[in-house]
Image 1 (cartoon, rainbow, N blue to C red):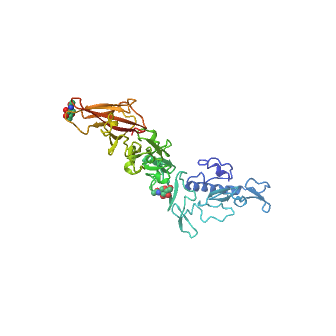
Image 2 (tube, rainbow, N blue to C red):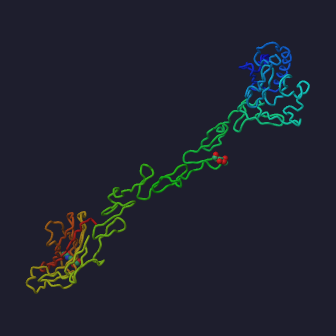
Image 3 (cartoon, rainbow, N blue to C red):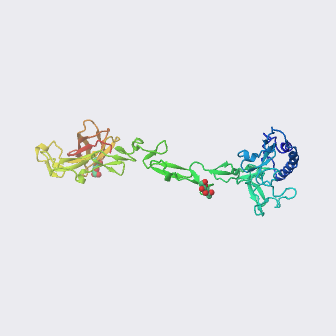
Length: 462
Ligand SMILES: *[C@@H]1O[C@H](CO)[C@@H](O)[C@H](O)[C@H]1NC(C)=O
Ligand SMILES: *[C@@H]1O[C@H](CO)[C@@H](O)[C@H](O)[C@H]1NC(C)=O
């Protein structure tokens, strides 16, 4: 039945083998199928009469039957395993076979081995409406064109079976443009808060670093990195889209942005502490030399050991405080021929001949100054305790000023100022005899009294 092949080329390319008719893959509709089958039937009858009756060699598709002495048609549907694949069914006919969709209502050739057709198509068309076929009970059931590949949906389209017909639709995320379904670029519609990635049939939102997709998969919410193990060594602050590391007071953030290193506050300024700055983790502290205590945070204040009771002086001694320490001095410092008349005051009795050239009185006083005072500096004021009408007082440094570190500036005739003339550095001490000479206006009377001033110079400037 090769003639049928030659007459169907309008829709099919020439088949690779004339006996294999790939109908279903190229015939678009059932109408054409019917047309072809009619053609096939029309050609079958003449062939039957032309069957050779005396040949021992038969053409393709026939075999010699010794009983009948005729060439007999071979039923390829029985002899060839899987002659038709999948949804196709095998139809034998003279000299060959056909593969047709199972749904195709096929009229078997009149002389074939299969059962006779229920109705010839010309007189008995499919009694069902288009898209339906009769089942065994002769009732019309819907033909699933989609599963039987009887549809003409494009590969890009989805086939949906409908009662009596089918529908070609685009999958979700695709849109029909012309005959084809084309992916919708959802990213054009700004569905995503940050970034959008178009995918075939769908899309995906992405977030910038530091954000994560919200529950709706579109908006981006800030990630609290501080709760997620951000590598801050000390303090972590979440901020929109990122986080910041901070350090405790006294520490500074390392260049890596995460770790903290101690600030050496002491290296910043030499004025942080009056005496000594000691750096500590996260802070610094000021230290003071012995004999001093910290005043507030940075200043050093002399401890008055005589006041605090920290001193150890004997009964006969008096505690004298100075910058950085104290001294125990004999309470009675009067040396012969002087006699003590009160605390600190020694008197040379006029009656004693040894006292004739001596100051009549010596008063002991103590004072303390710091090192390196700017000069000239007024350090001690001397005041005449008794004032005689018409008397005149002169003041001088009688002893202890060999190096000229001090001088006296007279203020008036009853008082004078001891002035430090040169910068001095302690620890050291001076014992200065400040003499007041009292004269009357006639110069007929002259009296001398001494203030023995011990000047302690502390080791420090404070
Ligand atoms: C978001 O995406 C996840 C994972 O793909 C999915 O399980 C979830 O249902 C989506 N949520 C919404 C609201 O679309
Ligand atoms: C010295 O001062 C006293 C008291 O103020 C006064 O009486 C006396 O006259 C003064 N003498 C001189 C020389 O100014």
